Length: 167
Image (cartoon, rainbow, N blue to C red):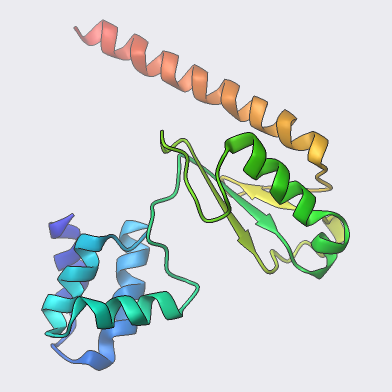
């Protein structure tokens, strides 16, 4: 991680005005801003970690936890909300036992909510692993998760089989 952080920091001089660009670079490179990265940015710019944290928490674009293997984004824009988007988000939270913005303890699933995905004619919409799932309903949530759970089990079995062959 320190090497990746150095790649992001290297092009920037020690000037506070680059803080937002650096944070965007860290987020793009690592997928989120860890505590270690926050402290590294502060050290590079010779400012306090609290100042870096203050800027990072001001903007919605920054995450402080990584995505899960399967990342779910529920749309709560006007059309999706009117068509039951909140009920769908509630169903994902209930099924995964996490709140929006969270990640399961095994890092298998993460869940976010956004203001609009841009697929209003297909409302309500969720995006799972960059695949759009249109016309969702709370009943479809369990079905979609079951399908992805089966996929995860197959991947795990293949990994375990590969490890067994290499031993």
